[in-house]
Amino acid sequence: MKSTFISKEKNEVKFKMEFTAEEFEDAIVKVYQKQKDNFQIDGFRKGKAPRSLIEKRYGETIFFDDAINNLFSLNYPLAMDELDLNVIDYPKTEMSQTKKGEGFDITVTVEVYPEFEVKDYKGVEIERVPAEVSDEDVDKEIANMADRNSRMVEVDRPAQDGDTVLIDYAGFVGDDQFEGGTAERYPLKLGSGTFIPGFEEQLIGASKDDDVEVKVTFPEEYHSEELAGKEAIFKCKVHEIKEKEVPAIDDDFVKDVSEFDTLDELKASKKEELQKAAEARAEDQMKNSVIEKIFEANDIDVPNAMVEEEINSSLQQFDQQLRVQGMDLNTYIQYMGEDMESFRENIREDAFKKTKTRMLVAKIVDQEEFEVSEDEIKEYLEDMAKQYGMEVDKLVEAIGPQNIETVSGDLKMRKAIDFVYDNAVIK
Image (tube, rainbow, N blue to C red):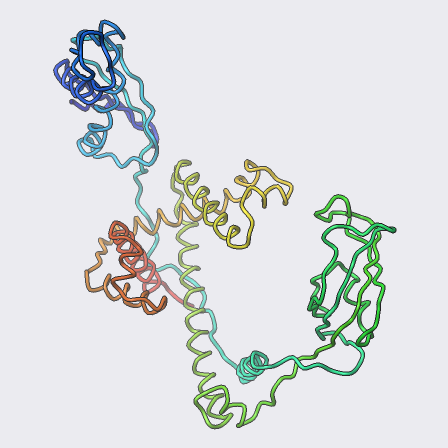
């Protein structure tokens, strides 16, 4: 096979793959040897019919398509290497006429990764993001700890905003009870906004064992067309009223929920913990600012094929998240009143930004010639294994040896981001 470069316009490359008559004949013979058992010719046992008889009965081109496909599949990657092409999309092909005993050629048109240099990525000016932690922040964090250690206790009084009531309810439009509007012993937190607007407020003031009729109007854009905009009555029975009991924040509480003995010790530890987290967030924000400045300073040609790939990847991840919640992407899109085409367009700009940013950072990796050692990869995998509570070997097995190269690429990208941040001018 001979590869000949023809032209390049923007990111689209055209080249020719030429095959000799001998190469074509060898490919046909291999297809015949592989497929001959599929043919039954009178006078011959199955798989023993000569190629000439098969071609006479079914046409001399019977093995052409598979032979051509095999030649292309085998030689296309070799042509990429020979012409030093970094392709990013599926090729379009145009083939010359093929005849028995003659060679042929395939003209390939394919989109390649654009060539560019990243400029102005050193000395980027950004503003410092403060990382201050106040005593109020510490008190709030400890209050959250107390809230997480609270318990629900039954109370003998009318329900108040913030209480949780245990209710039976049945919904009616007119005299007809509608489907999906019934439950028994349902725990509803008043003020949570979980139910239709106006529902929860009407249970405030109710007492245990009360029967309450809740009158509501369904929103005009309610997901159920049968109920949208209609007035309804929910007949409710109150079984229990519970309030949240938050423990007092004192030394005894500290001893129960931490390794410390006093509230002051816990506050000091929380302040240090919050300070580290605030500094990490501030650094991440400043790194993002540097990348955004580099994004704005570099106008590069972002191939549409890469943007489409990013959109597909985002949709696949979103679909997986929805399936965990018992839904799928198509159902979600219908629920939102959209179609797949419009939904893809809605996320196109974000996909473009992600693709361009990744291209810029990857190019900085090349320009600065960053490398990653085996020890760095090992350390990264060990940290990841700790996060997931796994052994490193099990993690590597789960990731797959073929994806370790992806880990190396991610670490190089991190180095590039750290590099432009370390070289930034922070005001």
